Every structure is written in structure tokens, then in C-alpha cells.
Amino acid sequence: MAEPLLTLERIGKVYGDKTALHDVNFSIYPGEFIALVGMSGGGKSTILRLIAQLEQPTSGQIKYADPNMVTRVMFQNDRLLPWMTNVQNLSFKSSDKVQQARAKAMLETVGLQDFPDSYPSSLSGGQKQRLALGRALMADPQLLLLDEPLGALDALTRRKMQDSITEICQQQHLTTLLITHDVEEAARMADRVIVVKDGTNVYEADGAKGQDAATIGTVSEDVLNVILNTPQEV
Ligand SMILES: Nc1ncnc2c1ncn2[C@@H]1O[C@H](COP(=O)(O)OP(=O)(O)OP(=O)(O)O)[C@@H](O)[C@H]1O
View 1 (cartoon, rainbow, N blue to C red):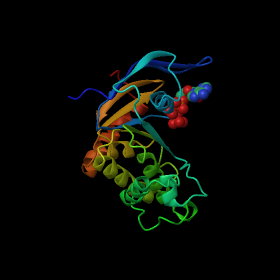
View 2: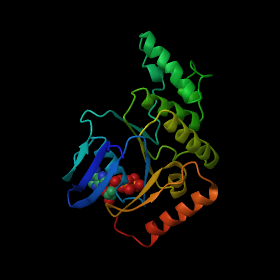
View 3: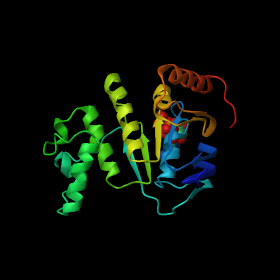
């Protein structure tokens, strides 16, 4: 197996008198799609912020294969720039021809090639998230972090976006970490599903990416049981 892109070792995070994380341990390997699932308040977003180096752990360490690893985060809120056109949101109005060509190609990758010159306000919720994904990918991240990116979408759009994101991540050979409350989403999209509960990773299952509905259902049920009832130490 390849060397991990990063490894969390005995990670703890304390805010004042609140322990958000204690003893989190897992590795992320190149090219894999991991989903972190669990109930609200379990510590998923804190893990993501530590991996993105937006905050430092209180104890333990994160070992990065490349200390200058490029990460990008995609949030539920698209954070697009409303005064720029769609293509400008990707090129940041760069006059560099290569950057402009990359932005156009990226619009195609995320399925928005027909709307380069309109503004984000004219896009649907799903399309805005596609553009936000494209913007994150413009940085060529070694690790893509998805923080509940589909949480605000209606059920049908959400389903379509799950498939699109999985496909794009696979095509681009991205390493991806998804945070979601939605156990079925995790099972459908991920190679590996990690359950985070009460500040620690309590369970891990193979995901059902690219598999049939029955397999997705079995994985979801298994993971849901752990979240609701029967924690086991990894
Ligand atoms: N900046 C902070 N200051 C104080 N407590 C915090 C801070 N950030 C997180 N916490 C606490 O740490 C715990 C874990 O929060 P975290 O947001 O990581 O959980 P989560 O699983 O991502 O939840 P959600 O799914 O609701 O985002 C919670 O009890 C939360 O209140």
C-alpha cells in the first residue's frame, strides 16, 4: 500500500473546558475518498479544521507526507463572488491565458460550460455547488475537504450531485475527505466510512462507492447502528 498522505496520531482538541476531540487516529491514503459521519457535535468539523491547518491540535500530531500540502475546502455555503462571472470565479479575472484556458476547461469538468459569462446568482443551488467545486479544484489540491457541501440542496439535486462529485473526484484522481450527517450519502460516495462519535473515531467500514443499492443499504444500516447504538473501538 502507498504511504499515507497524512496520519492523525492521538489527536486531542480542547476549547476552554470543552473537549471536542480526544484520541483521534486514522490515515488518509492517496486517491481515496473518505467520509466522516456521525451525529452533530461529535467532532467532524473540528477534525476537518485541524487537517486543513486552520487550527492546531491541543495534543497529538498530524503527520503530512508533504508539509506544504495544498488543501482546499468546499463548504455548504458556496462562498462564490457574486460580482464576478462564473468563469471569473474560477480564473479570478487573471489575464494569464493559461489560467483563462484552465478556468474554461474546469467549467466543462463541472458541467457548466454553457454559462461562462453569467453570474452565480442565475445558477441553481446545485450549479452553484458545481462552480464552488470547480473553484476548489483550480488550486490542484492534494487533498479536497468537503464540509457538508450538499446539505442545503433538495433531495433529488443532492442525489445527482453525489454522483457528479464522486465521478469528478475519481476522474481527477483526487484524495477527498467528506463530512456529512447523511449516512447513505457517505456509503454511496466513499471508499471508506469513518464514524466519529463523542470526539473520537469509533468505527470504520468499507464504503459502497459505485456499488448497487442493496450494498449501499447494507453499509448504511451497519454504520447507522454504530452511530445510534453500539460503538466499537477501531
Ligand atoms: N470554537 C469552538 N469553541 C468551543 N467549542 C467548540 C468550538 N468548535 C467546536 N466546539 C465544540 O466541539 C464539539 C465538536 O464540534 P464539531 O463542530 O467538530 O462537531 P460536528 O460533528 O462537526 O458537528 P456538526 O455536524 O453539527 O457540525 C462540539 O461540542 C462543539 O460545541
